[in-house]
Amino acid sequence: DGDPAAIAAGKSLFDAVCATCHNTNGDGMGPSGVNLDPPPSPFNADQSAWSDGYMYWRVDKGAEGGPSGTTMAAYGASYEEAQLWQMIAYIRSLGT
Image 1 (cartoon, one colour):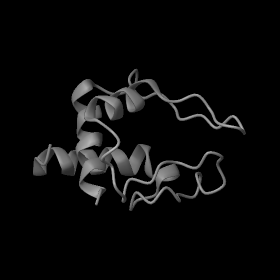
Image 2 (image 1 turned 135 degrees about the vertical axis):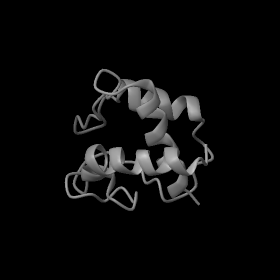
Image 3 (image 1 turned 90 degrees about the vertical axis):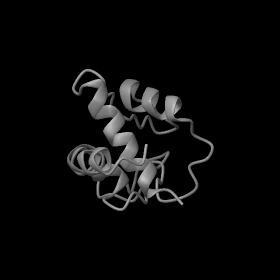
Image 4 (image 1 turned 120 degrees about the horizontal axis):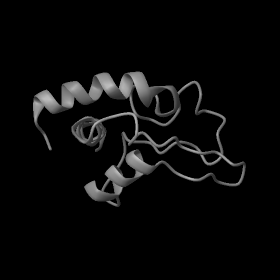
């Protein structure tokens, strides 16, 4: 949402939770994600295809795997709604 406080809080959460696969710069090439199939989504690119609602749903519910069974964890049970929105605010700040 462009709120600096939400983005800063989201960065902390992203670094702790998402960066291992999506990388700290959001390029999708984190140490645990580099060999995944499908690869983690890059967030430092065009995000126009993703609505905020879709992004929230994906972080909340996770994703079933691709050809090799890769699965993104669901974080809705571990984090409050406000924290998920903070993650999304930070992810949005990475886009072009």
